[in-house]
Image 1: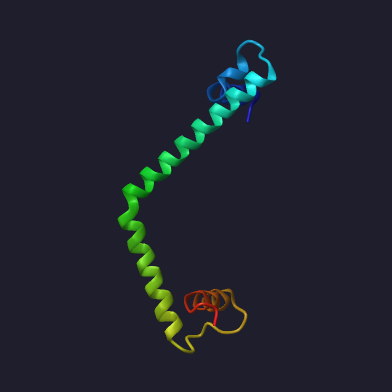
Image 2 (image 1 turned 90 degrees about the vertical axis):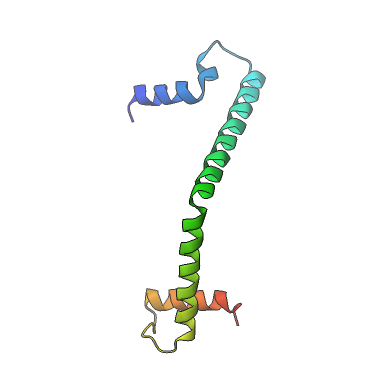
Length: 100
């Protein structure tokens, strides 16, 4: 990132840092407010995303759960030994059956 790009970013997201000199207490107050606003914006974007995509997310989650359940019920499907797939399968099955 160029120095001007960093400066532009800083001015966009933290304009109060580029105005007149302020006391540390004032800067902390403005930084706190800025942080809280950014958190609110982040939560809002996430809520909107999941609201708009909840059906697709739930459908994929259900499909994955069904695959894991079927895979755990099927003995000897070739996922054996120390392969990554075998480890993932065993881990998924353990999670599904509560670690027993």
